[in-house]
Image (cartoon, rainbow, N blue to C red):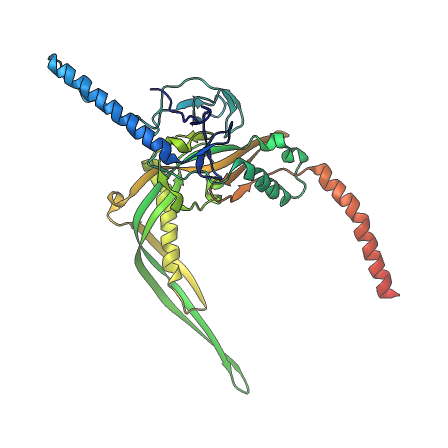
Length: 371
């Protein structure tokens, strides 16, 4: 199958998804186009294919041949796949990318054609944070981490930040749970001679149900769970049916952990949320101690529903003085987490300059006090 690209209607250049305008934008002439323009063209192309397939099938029947069922629909997942030789991450990109670096480990990669394109997301949250905004947000993040090496501030380093659609499973679960514990009430009063303290202990039991919708679990074994969890939540109002038009200019990784495998992590998070909900209904006590709880899905595994979606994430992998550092940012909301090194020389210079000032101030205060 041929890869699908989007051409500028004015100059013929290949369009990229522009997070700022939420449109397809030409990097050459600056023209912008709504998705609807190309959706109409794609629908017409699909209809032409169906018509030709029907005509071909009719001709075959007339000649006595049997017409077989054929997948004639243009598949939006016709993308190139490459595998990093260092960490093994499988990343999907468009045919225009020739040389790049792995978004997960930073290893330089020369792309080779891969026929394995089984990539079927149900929905996608498009990028909203643009490349132009990334520089300011990343610099602001570094400034909140004192003594970051100056190499991290350079344009060349910031340009290595990759926009990648990370695979997720979204789970819908009708949860049920029970909670057991004790609640304590402590009160006191006094008379002219004594202070009296009353300490009551009560057994507490709660049970209830909770419908959990769109619980996210990342579906990539290469993505550190804590890095993804920390940049949540995503705003699901932007969740849209998957379209190829959102992909140009970004990478996308396919899942390597299926919905069944990830369900255990989803159940754990859903169980914690259910217990927290039940605990929140216990009020009117000085203190509460949970002694036991149990949770489960109503109807068992049949009650669980999942959707395969792609979420926008910016990643920057850096190897600095033999150690690995990972910065990640929510490509929709701008929420960022990561770890950066400390420049020992900058830290030493800072205290070398500040220490005499602090010492002089301390001596001056001491003289004023005892003068």
